[in-house]
Image 1 (spheres, rainbow, N blue to C red):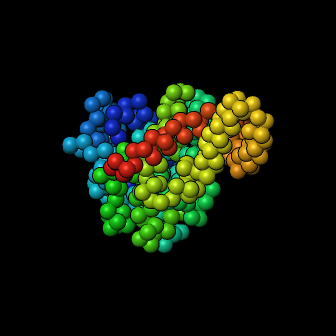
Image 2 (cartoon, rainbow, N blue to C red; image 1 turned 120 degrees about the horizontal axis):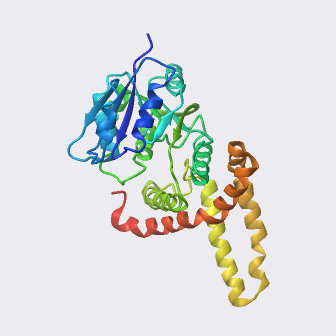
Image 3 (cartoon, rainbow, N blue to C red; image 1 turned 90 degrees about the vertical axis):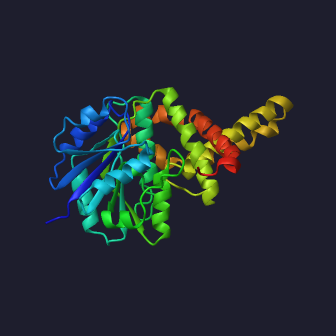
Length: 330
């Protein structure tokens, strides 16, 4: 008999997505699993929606503990030998649980396996499709040794999870999964990415939400990277490509200002080299945009990724840099 898998889903005020999340999980083509939803003091209809699903076990937290606390509480209530963490705004692909079981069967006990978002996100706006392709590419570049495994698709043995303390509850509001993955690696665990384990994220992004997301992630990731001393590491969505794109746009703005103020053409000479290097570094990501939606997606993604998205990312990095001496990673 294969080991029981517990799909653990933290949620807080997730009425717009939790029903779809559970429907997708229950439509899995794999039978030997349970679903545990950990509700972190929702004030909307989340609990009543979850209670409509008889095969789902609901754990209600009190007081509010945050996403990390909800994941830990869900894991504590789970009975499976393997824990499969996803988020309440993620839709499991029909074969995701089966692929998670297969992946864990092939690994030694101290191995932790990650999945990622689907390359494309049908039904989403341009900004959601951009984000899904960007994250899919960024998280699957290094399948044998990823820098981290994200909690939107993290598969781990329950005994390993409990022995290693779980997700940090006294931490920043996001990227607690990055901290946990780094802690696992430091204690001798092996991280592996399996691109067959896929979830479709429900983004519902507008331009503003996309820009705000880029700013928020950059702000907190900068603080964590300063603490971790890995600012230049090619780390998933904190990718080397995005760092180069942000630096290229920032330098371009400075060079153009120098040209406008001085009138000297020397200020413009570095631009072709800068942008050629930027495109070369981002070539794999640009191919991912093309694979996700052909030229119709590639061209707007190219413009957005190179000329717009680096602005909130750069601003977030500046804010994180200024905040770090006072706030650190708390």
